[in-house]
Length: 249
Ligand code: FE
Image 1 (tube, helix red, strand yellow):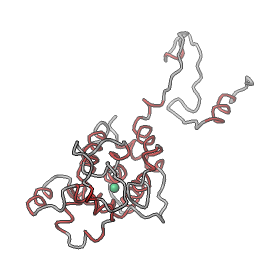
Image 2 (spheres, protein in one colour):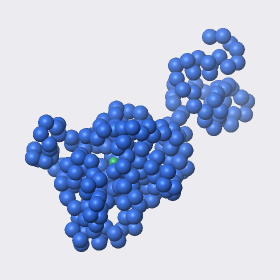
Image 3 (cartoon, protein in one colour):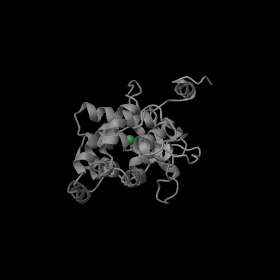
Image 4 (tube, protein in one colour):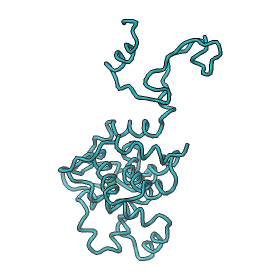
């Protein structure tokens, strides 16, 4: 490698994306008489990665959006990754506050993480599936719950509660909005029975009383619309700064 300034960056950029950190694009490791950083001491530095602890939210969640789980279809005409990005774009277009845009973006994060979301109930009964379809295990209420719990390590309830409640919001809307059921995709109708069917009047009243019920209903409406294969949503990078700004330090 030529010993000229800038060569290290050139080589690094030839095999990967060079991300700028608070140190800039390049950290010059050298020994200083009065070191202000471990890297400026004469101590040996073993191979390591800095970025995970500098940018944990965007890096961790971005990895899921870039991973194989995001390319699953779960019975819909768009992948789960596209679906979540579309939901966030709809929230943004509607002028939603940042936590609600984040909730729309992350509402199915439980699916992306591929957690067993059936709560140990076993596969859906054969009769609940249309003939010829394969069983899809991650399609019940558990993904809202597990997703919200995981997101709680970074975000407050304005983000996590709509995520947790977005499945209940579907059951709620089926109970209170006569036209709503007709808007559901075939897959969403299929999972409704697994999720408990429409709420009773008492359940709907209890749901309405929850602090984040309205936001959960908003997320649900974007969720139901965000299944259009003709739409190309913005990529995850578009929403990463919003997540960074919302995350607890
Ligand atoms: Fe969804």
